[in-house]
Length: 145
Image (cartoon, rainbow, N blue to C red; front, side, top):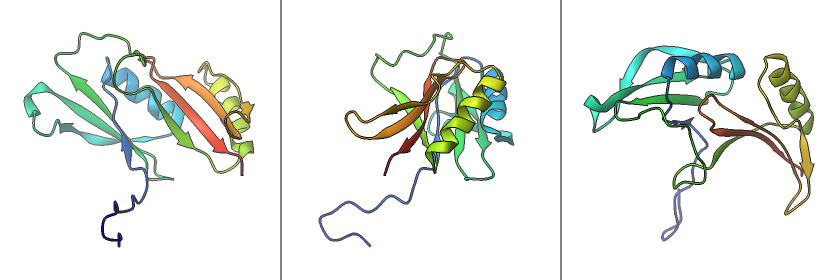
């Protein structure tokens, strides 16, 4: 329960929903890269049901979901993080060694990535950076404790 005058606590991260240029290609990519399972129905855009749809992918291990959105008005432009909106999405991993496994996995399936970057500026963390088919930057991160 939140104290009066303070924001209630957030229980965790539930889902990430990018707009993509090709829902089917992106769904196949996210399934392959993250081992996610596709929910076998499409979802309308809440409040704008006639403008497109989304497909939902679930990670059965963590419960994290990714909703890939198709908008009829999107001409298929590639993502550009320098525009207002999303810059990147970062997924936490439990241990630094998990990043080595992820970098190896991404290499094995042909997904270009940064390899593990260890830094202490401006704080200690390790990260693997890569991009989805629409050029959305994704990260896997471990905060050094």
